[in-house]
Image 1 (tube, helix red, strand yellow):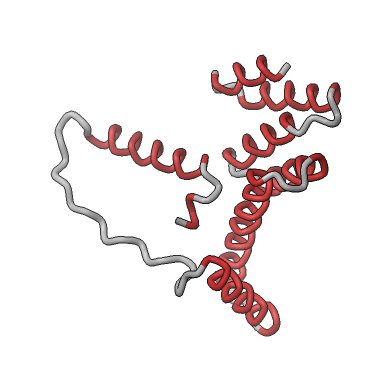
Image 2 (cartoon, rainbow, N blue to C red; image 1 turned 60 degrees about the horizontal axis):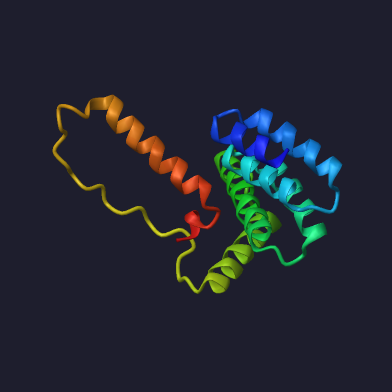
Amino acid sequence: MLAQAGTASSGGQKEQAVKLWQQAAQAYPSDKSPWLSIAQARYEAGQYGEAIVNAQEVLVRDPNDTLANSIIAISGLRLSTRSLSDLSRQNNLSGSIRTESQDLAKLLRESLGEAVLVPPAPAPVQQAATPARGKAGAKKAAKAKQEESSADPFGALK
């Protein structure tokens, strides 16, 4: 089942792969690998809540699994960032929520050993556009870079 799921996943059939991993998890309830694969697939799809739930299933089976802990931490941060952004946009980030958010940001900075939690984006490098690349090529390159960074749960913290 795991081999079939891996083949389906690498072939772009992510939902079919998840179904197979779920079947494997039912057939072998003490095995953490199907849950870890589901958590990683959900994380890569931007489904952070589901990624967290599945990564927690991994930790039930192996409390020291680093990848599962990473998925939970980064997914939680991405959900928090999204929620805080929504609250800020709605001008509802005030009082105890604001104070608690600032305290959490300080804790994260201290934990990471960084003076700034999210460093400013580097200035874009001006490159001469090559005629062969065009807009479609630039979009593909940007998408590939985004996919590369989303596959690494710690990519956002580097």
